[in-house]
Image 1 (cartoon, rainbow, N blue to C red):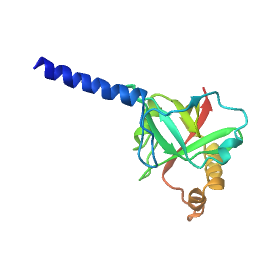
Image 2: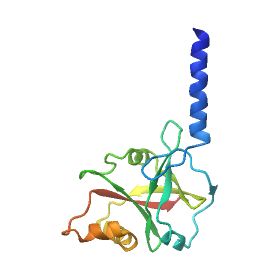
Image 3: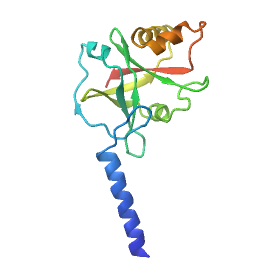
Image 4: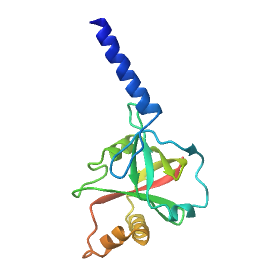
Length: 165
């Protein structure tokens, strides 16, 4: 019985180590774990984000295995924003698991191409900033542009600001 228990514990430890230190890449709507890439500080010139249509965002849950998702990204001058769509109207963190993770730990890593940028993430609560961020998304993505024109209503979503740590 002890050997079966030891085998189970060993297998679980190996799976945990693999997920925490080797990782699974996110793809489209499927989440991943640890993101691979070269970590560096965020450059002051953010124009490289203008051509990045999808990026990956790595969060850090309390249990130590990173959780990463694919998101869209837009910038308004020197501010970086990512949206999080919900099925129904609700306040942040809503129904998205990764939103609950960043509400508890705002330290994230953003991967653009193969570069990782350590950042903090916070929900946008200021109404004027929210409009500016929404407009930035609309300028870059047809989906968000369409949302801006639908009878004045906005989709159910949160906008989150990314800033250097």
